[in-house]
Image: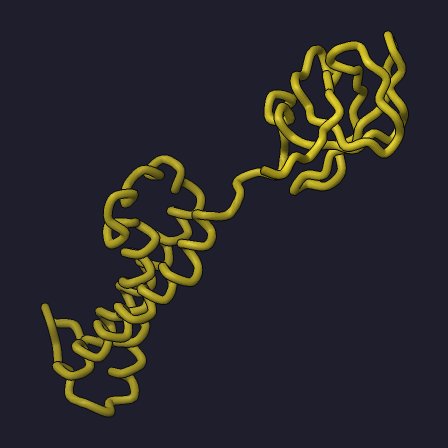
Length: 176
């Protein structure tokens, strides 16, 4: 079957090449259109490009094999494109979107977390506290919030962070 004077194989191949190039460009410049598709997942450029790429690849293969008529090949290619795009969205894009963006931390984000004293904190002095985070263990200088002594291996609550120093208070887990 021909369309606009070209065979369907040629059309599928040209669409596949352009969709592949558009996908590569989207990988590099996708941040410029980041907000598109937040409301409806169908409008997400990644989903649209994956549909076009998979549909044209499936159509090209089906036309090359010539198992069915061209009309059935188009229908089959569209169905294959939809199925693969839905799988791509559900199993790749959704988990990536919900993944943490960064493993870095800010000093403000340490407030309210629990840590463990690894160097005892004396009155009017500094000790050291270790905090477990997603990115690993963080060791920071600490002082008692109320200027109290805190012993080694005590669990502490980080109340505040001032100039890189943690102000901590001994933490007691209370059950209600």
